[in-house]
Amino acid sequence: MNVETELFKMTTVGVLAALLLASLLIALLDMGVYKESFGAALGKQGLNYNGFQTYLLLAAALGLSLFRDWRSTRRARRHKRQRSARKETRGNRTKP
Image 1 (cartoon, rainbow, N blue to C red):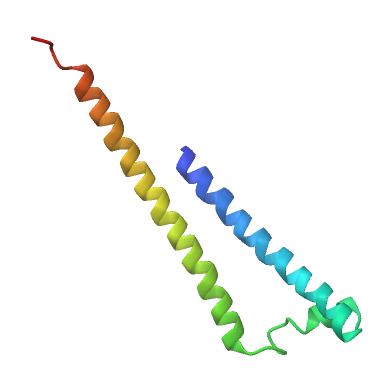
Image 2: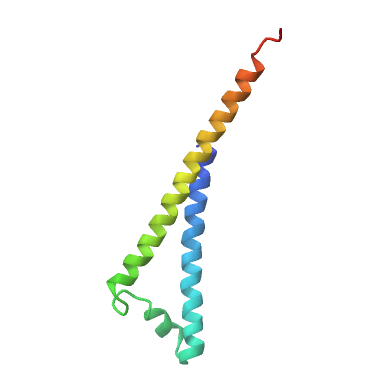
């Protein structure tokens, strides 16, 4: 596997981990504010309690972030190829 693929995978894992930790943090904050158990606070984040719109918004945000990362990875790869091609053409020049 190449480096770009591994970087994309690690970014995906990082975004998913951040989403999970944010969900746990919101549940912990709900516990403190509403004086409820952790299970009840976590349950309020479920699909039945919230609306479909909430999860659609979260899925759109996750999809957009992964798309932007994929696009920037492609752009970086293209620029790297162009830089290496320029270096090769400079090295092959003959001096008068």
